[in-house]
Image 1 (cartoon, rainbow, N blue to C red):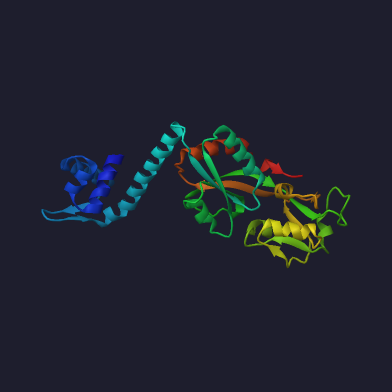
Image 2: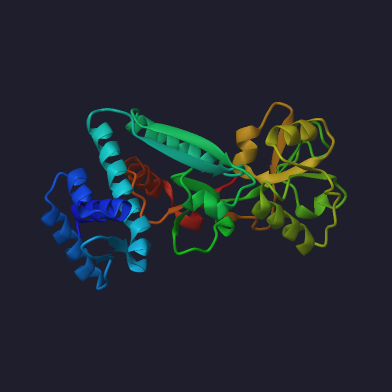
Amino acid sequence: MDINQLNCFISVAQTLNFSEAARRNYVSQSTVSRYVSDLEKEFGVQLFTRSHRDVIITNEGKTLLPYAMEIVDTLKKAKTIIKQMHDGGQGKITIGCDITSVSFPSKCIADFNNKYPSITVDVRQIDEVDRSQAITGNDFDFCFMPRDMVPESSNIESITTHCESLCVVTAKNSKFKGRKSINIKDLANEKILLMSETVSPIVYMEIMDLLRTFHISPNTETTFDDLVSMYVSVSSGIGISVIPSSLAKYASSEFTEIYPIDEIDTGIAYVMAWKKNIANPAAKLFMEGVKKYAMGDDNVYGL
């Protein structure tokens, strides 16, 4: 099977006319007939029924058509991107990040940008969407998110990138001032402000499970859909928050303090996920850089 066979098959399927298909592909009608026949032999089915008057596409041909069009379209995109890269033009990759996944992708993107400055990197937040669609759709080349958030699908591949430990964030002059760490039991009587379950379901559930393990039933009525609002509330002394450590450091300010949680493992595994058989050459270059930094569960982001 080659691209010429698929192009001729698509043309016949769209026009139901071998002569028109030959004209569109700048080949003879006999060549189109041979290409279609070769495909039929390869698949072991009849793709068209022919008579002196009509050409009718079979059910098998209708089934093959969208796959053939996708293959041809993917090859065209690959040729365009490769030519752009070869000519010094701009390739492009689009990165999706869960709101709690910040430091690791930032490191990878910075390294990639230094090596390939002509390739555009578009970074967007994955927020309140179908994660499966985010990964397998056309909006993102790669998605960074907690491992347990990745849907089970044969069309999705992933690599474990790092492990995030949880920490406590408080106002600058809270009652915990001067301490090096906080014990989970210290949170029993605190008002805890969290990122909402809708925005960050895995992190939310991990925190709630952790509190239940230690028989803590805190006041967690207040949740936020954005990090800025939560940090303003914490820095104002309305309550304290529990979030992944690298996110806490990334968003830290002169008005807040960050404390590790001592004596227990609070690690959450993160991954980079992507649609299987990725074709974007620029994306493949980015993947090489990520694999260099990714160390699995031993790569822990703490304080």
